[in-house]
Each structure stands twice: as C-alpha cells, then as structure tokens.
Length: 329
Image (tube, rainbow, N blue to C red; front, side, top):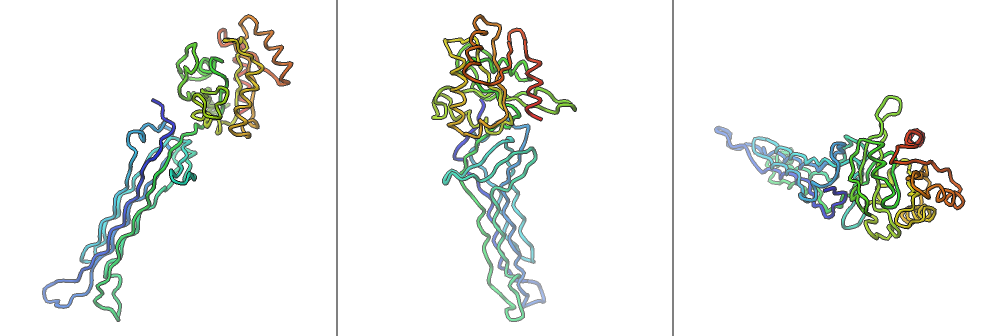
C-alpha cells in the first residue's frame, strides 16, 4: 500500500506543568519561607524529514500523536521535569496543511530537516518565584499553559529530478525499469501503475544521483479529478524536468499527436508553470509497424524535437540517458 495523502491527523503538544504552592517545613524553623518550584515545559511536536520513509502509511493507521506534558513543580524549590518531545518522521516532500483553514503549516523538503510544528506549553511559576521583601509568604502560583494542538492533512509530493508523463500504456513503467533500479508492475492494461515509482538512474561522481519518477494516472480531464486525477498530478510539481513519453504505435487506436496536446492541456489546467519546466519529447515503440508514419504526422503538428526510442530492443536509450543528464544539470 502506497499512501501519499492522509487527512484529519490529530496532533497535540504537551501542556506545561503547574507551579507548586509550598513552604518550608523543617524542625526548628517555625516560619519557613516559600519553596514551591516551577512546572516543567510541555514537549514540542516535531517533524523530521527522513529519506528512508517512503510514504505516509504510518499515519493512516495512527492518526493521533501527542507530546508529553511537563511535570508540576514540587516543594524544596524543585522544578518539574520537562515533557518529552514527540518526533514524527515523515517522507521528504511532505506538505502539512491545516484541516480547518486549508493553509499550509509546514513543508519538509530535505532529509534531516527539523520543524517544530506545535510548541509545548510553558511551565507555571511556583510561589518561590513571587517572594519579595514586601511579600515574604506568597500564596500565588500560575498554572502551566496548554500546548499547541490542531488537525492536519499530510500530503506527499514526490521529490524527483525527472518525471515521466504520458497516457496509460505509453510504456512509462517499462522505461522506468530499464533506466533505473526500480521494479514497477508492468502489464498491458490501463492503470497498471497505481502509485508513483521512483528509481535511481545514476549515482556517480560525474553525474550524481538522478531520481526518475513514473507519474501514473494522466488521462483526459485528470485535472478535474477524473480517474486517478489529482492523486498523482501533484507529484509533477517538484520535478526539475519532464519526459513526455508518447506511444507512436497508436495502441488502442490512439492519436499520438493529439495525445501530446492533451497531456499539455491537462498539465496547464492543473498548473501552467509545469509547461515551463525543462523537458524532452520521447517517441516510444518506434519498432512497431506504422510508428514512422505516426511520427511524421506528429512532427507536422508539433514543431518540437523528438527523441526516438524502443524499450523492446533498447534503441535510443543511451541517447535518452544523456539527454536526461543535460536536463538535470
């Protein structure tokens, strides 16, 4: 199960401990002064980005989390112990929204990034704090303040260098498996891919690490949440570059030239800035009968450079790798 969105997560920071009302009670000291200690601070609720966490499935089954309360102050001037922080590890690329207002509360974009989402309450003051020359026996204390709390929605937007976009059965999963170490499910029917697959194409001193994401779910009217719709379009936002994968074999009576127009239309309706990303148009299945003619028609309608490949015989894959490196530099 790949979970990239969880709603109505109840989170709460710890309450501060109350201040203590106490006076010294020792033998031979009949009028001991005030010695009530302060309460401890409540624990913070903290989010930490963790590259080893792949999705939000943990929050699907544990939708509540609380930090520890601070302990109350004690006599003999003893301060209460601070409450332990509650630390939640979330995938890199997680965006946190307030369920009530819809406003963004936090965003995790790097491994090890640490954000205090909710601050713990402050500890109350014991009566020892209020002792003065004019008030030598204060009976006044303050309670600990409540910690922050709220209901939040967690949304994972995959961080990848390159996103593969195309209609179902264009060959995105096959290409991902050939370019990277990912092992997506591959079959000849729509919506075989039900979650984003991310693989590493290269991790060398020369080129560094290049992450490629197979973005499923793009069909006509995906921006209106048709089909898998918005569930996956959000993952394209963080990609540095896009690879438009077009099925030149025209399987299922598709029109490659129209497919490219439809894909750009869906992206522009979702977010026009996506069309400004660096990109390459890739014609797949060029080993099929009729692919050359479909490519000629495609080029007459769209004045763009097209890189030709075939996943079946690996033709053009090395050139595509070089192009991807160029796009991500």
